[in-house]
Length: 139
Length: 139
Image 1 (cartoon, rainbow over the protein chains, first blue to last red):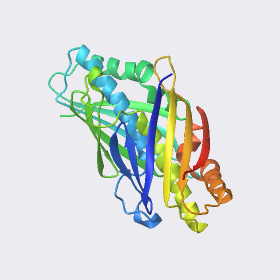
Image 2 (cartoon, chains in turn orange, yellow; image 1 turned 90 degrees about the horizontal axis):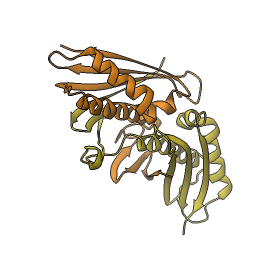
Image 3 (cartoon, rainbow over the protein chains, first blue to last red; image 1 turned 135 degrees about the vertical axis):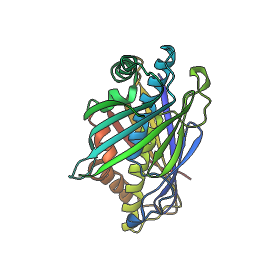
Image 4 (cartoon, each protein chain N blue to C red; image 1 turned 30 degrees about the horizontal axis):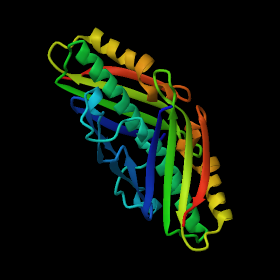
């Protein structure tokens, strides 16, 4: 059974040192809650996880399709509930591409394969919230 | 309505540069899937998100209770499904403390307040998977 383990050690105040696959990430709060903004807040890491997961899927599927964009950026917007504990009830993923003669049908295919078949982060989040997406080809 | 946004831009191969609350994190795959391990994998960031969220809750609740441990570390173990897309179906959180005469009842209270009332990452994950925890006082 595959298992992943992270260690997140308290440094001081609200700062923690996360060790994730042997890479260090400092996580911290903003100053109005006692932090010093030495690193990201915990909750947006949920968005980075989704963006990285689907981004890797899409770029590797496109490579197999012999499509290589000049630029590829994944934006994830997460909407938080008003009630406490504030948590994401909706996420929207924007896949942004730049490149000459990019084939929209292949981009759509790569995105839908990630969303429906490959991304293990999407599959979790979809069970608890609305997950939408769009593709943008930028100039 | 509060919103969080992250940008995760493709660098090359499987490497992406995430910008999370203005802090950069490189996310990458391992070499057997075309990456170079320049940063963590996307999925374990879900675990770091949970650990940071509950860690900040616990340390700030303990501070209000006038309990300051010498050491505090949050381990999150995530179990992945065998079937694809592989995703977490269970997480276990281990709260590790060191310190002189730490009051177990207060540690338990702080952890349960985070789990049940404060942590907006737990509240999401609990809806889709089994989430368990334990407290360890280390020598």
